[in-house]
Length: 207
Image 1 (cartoon, rainbow, N blue to C red):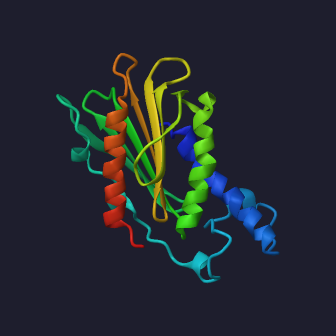
Image 2: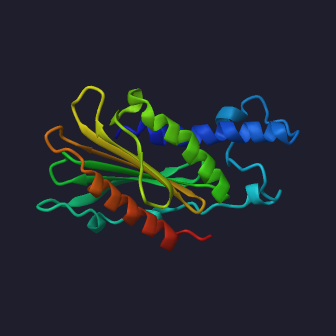
């Protein structure tokens, strides 16, 4: 079983916490365990019926394809897909032939664009925390809405790492890239993958 990115794993939890706060603000009791078990985070302004709308069970069509990952002399396969339960979404793990390079691509689908934006803002603050897995300097990147990126190494220096996150409509994408320390992840490569992921969401996710 692969290790899930610390940042990606926190994206859902952050918005569940936000949903509980929004529930209190609207005089609705979130319940004793809502901060960890609420099923569908919502923004503070949606119509009452929106939060109960059924979500598709399979978002695999939103992921990039292995052929979108262009590395001279190398190729990638989709090694694993996992559904994301809260909020609904999909996670894909791409590996190269030798297993030395990995791309962990997670897409969270919210009911409203504003909620996805709140998740991005909350999680972007974590990019500057090296304890979450990347030693590097966070920067803005021109992809989707509010794109943020950090490129560097793992805290122990054993891997080259990068994380990029952005929203597209009501989706939040978090992409983590790992490679050997002597094979650093290049910012242009990270941006190219992110833009292809953005295009896949645009074409595959209903408004």
